[in-house]
View (cartoon, rainbow, N blue to C red):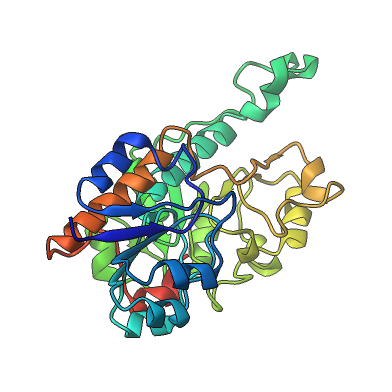
Length: 330
């Protein structure tokens, strides 16, 4: 066994599960984090000197060129979580080190939650929360409840999560349109969706699901003028990032009761306790729970170990991140 890998964070049992760890240990010596906190960048540089790989996850310190220069054997860094933008500078990609993450795994569960929120809001389930208040019985049983079948669904951003949501829609026979300036029409057609402008998507969709990454172009992309285009009776779902939306403008539009919203993410996060969005009956605000699930977190580590084994076998990891992908990824 000539491979050595260091884990930079305390090994949370929900992610670093024993059977997968045993699989990793069958092909590499593992340097465990023996602290109750993540290693600092300086500690990683010191401890990774004779390692071939680095595993990071939530809470990990940044891996900069000081680490790469101190650890010349390191040829791959695998992130057992999603976003890597805050962890690795672009110079690392130029250095020849391979970077992977587990975003594709988490995307599956984000897509599932986006569908959950869509159905919940179409059926006005928040109305029946906590045993259903007395006024929930005031109208006919189906008042305000609608189905997803046959509806026009607009997906903003055909990212990993946008595509995961898309894969769940065929049984409902939806007309799916999408806005994504980073994808070609031919690629969209292969996915079975029609590319339209953001304005057309907002104006024509019964369900609007936001899956765009945070870039300089997308920050604040849904401003007051764009939000006014959302039609009466629509459902708006955000499982991407709150910074993509003007929340004051969103609160103003939702206060009219024209449409409903499910906001898994907000800006800031969490919202102040007195924020207008917290007071509206047509809004639900989960606490950024779309990606993590108790049973699915192990898949992030499984994904990392599988990619390490592929890399060490001379094959391309399935979840390879390239420098070109950085600009348009979450």
